[in-house]
Image (cartoon, rainbow, N blue to C red; front, top):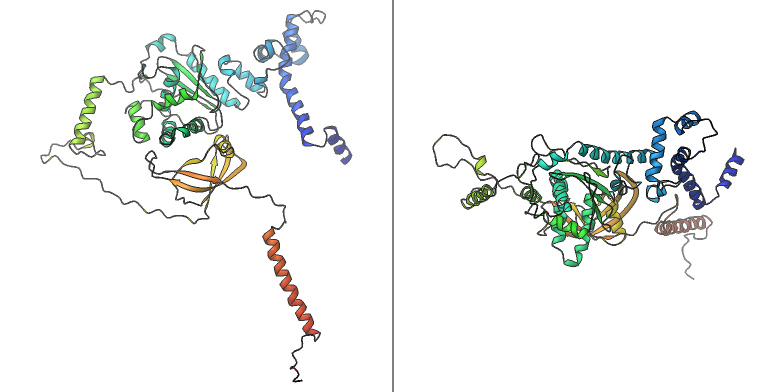
Amino acid sequence: MMEILNYKKTEIQNSYVDFKASMDAVVERVEEGFVQIGYYLKIARDTQVLQESGYKSVTDFAAAEYGLDKSAVSRFIAINDRFAEDGYSDRLKDQYRGMGRAKLSVMLLLPEEITEELTPDYSKSDIQKIKDEVEEEKKVTDLEVMMEQQDFDTELLDNSLKRAMYQLGHDIPELHRKIWNVWQIWNGWQQEKWPELPREIMDILAPAGEGMHSVRVAGIGRLMITLHGADQDIALINVRSGEKEKYSWDDMMEAIGLLMEGDTPEESWAKTYGKNSSVAPVQLDPKSKVTKAAEPKPGSQGAEKNIPENEEREEMRQEEAEQAAGVPEEIGPELLPHGTSKGDGISWKEPEKKEPRPIELPPEDAVYTYPMGTNVMTDIRKGQRFLILRIHDPYRVGNTVRLQHQKDGEQTGAEIDIRITHLINDHGGLVPGYVALQFEILPAPPEEIPGQMSIDQMGKETEEDRKDEEESEKEADAAAGIYSERPESDT
């Protein structure tokens, strides 16, 4: 058995590089196989090669010789038509290598404008979600889209990206909150630090390094926001028309800036979208690269923030009057009792002010561990990031934070240790409860062979061994009479 193993190992060479090359070749052959099957089926269909075989058609040939039914033959041929080089080849296009037959079969049902944005890192379930979004939009007629009432200012949101980001923040308030937090921090820094902001936004929108958000905009239909990194343009696809637009990250910053109002993220969301939102928030799946569009409640399409201008102004004047009269913000007129009893009209009490609890600082050698996405880890390794925003645990300068790389919700084993050098928790743009950590990267500890002693351990043990050896020698000499305790001679 050992001779067989040695022989097989020699066949694929002894080095990892040679082994990896051999493995890659095998995987590529498997991936190209179904494309080649489609190619040969097309040759059988389009030429006279089957004339002498006795089979009347390519489907008869495939069924008799290989057990492929008519639908399988059509699928193989369609995959070759769509994904092979030049549409008629035994070679898969470079951009689709690594996809596999299962993913490509689903991608057959997607428009080319979308499939060319997908990479092998998208899972089959991600691609299925995208297909579901496309199918869902097909159920809506053009007349229904024309009748939908838009709830945004078309002059202010004058391009598709601004409208898509407006809708995304509405459907996913959690994303709006996260973006608002980092926007306020970076907006307060000097202008030369501004280029760092797209990386922060990218890490929020696509923690896995790439992703696609589907949003449904009233009067337009579904729009797909496709992200491939802070250094690449954003692709925006209109599912109904198939139109694809490219936007820069400067365009993205302009679109987001229109949504960042208010002194808190909650106030910003309320000012942007109004108080009567009728779409259930979308729940984010950290393991998925795709976010599906929110489904509006029946009869609510385009109903949010549909307040006549004069009525909205009247509400603003009423709020200003209440503030001038000294009505606490926490207890507005709609929360006051409406009983019939007579009195002075004051039935509320000032809210009790609670003293903040003192924060107990941890020891200086405290170590914290947090999962971190690919973008942040990469930027830290390259020296392109020097701040991290966290919920304010009781950190102190000198604490160590161990960042553990996480991809698709799983730990990869990669780690970076950083030491906190400065804390920023009183900046005007920070939400209460958050802190910005400035840090330095700690050198990675040297790998130790099991059982190997460090230099300090060796020095310590050597000194102890020397003392033990001296004691042993003294005891042996004393036993031999060399150091006998006889009285000294007077002479």
